[in-house]
Image 1 (spheres, protein in one colour):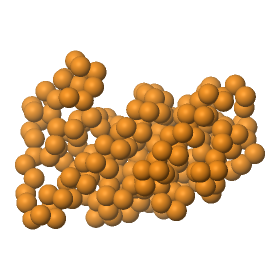
Image 2 (image 1 turned 30 degrees about the vertical axis):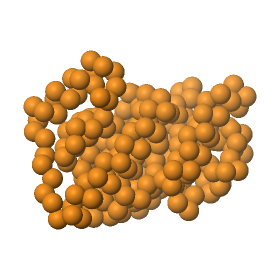
Image 3 (image 1 turned 180 degrees about the vertical axis):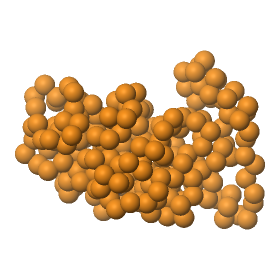
Length: 215
Ligand SMILES: [Zn+2]
């Protein structure tokens, strides 16, 4: 695993940041990045504070263990399935961040009430159909919901985000939480969010491409 140390350290750093942000209560959530023709993923059941790069598990895209002493996260099918379906995904962050999870428990996706929805890859953030954690059914539902997007909510569960880098995937997961909070605040105030139309959202996406970042 020595040759994976730099990437491993980055995975651990992002996982610990995720927990520090309150996005991974009760040791939930997991983080992975492509490595060789498979991936490196956080292990099952280990507190993030104690995690080191040596605790990560190298698996192939079918879940076969290549290296590592520990068991991979129980959500490994979620990660392998997304990497198989999405060549653009280089890293994946799965959180149980509180406000996005609250929305996911109402089985509500997030419409384009704010232009930053486009930062998450498209004109909305969908909520995947429910399936039991750790199952291929959950992975399949997530792959469907994240199609053409960089993030999706997982019904009665949490958030999945992908990126071309670990930092990018984590930024998407954080923005999903931010947007979910704003959306819930509007609903809690009894207000009706105004939804941006397709043309508005296309202009935002073009702007992101032009400037390489969110405005
Ligand atoms: Zn989870």
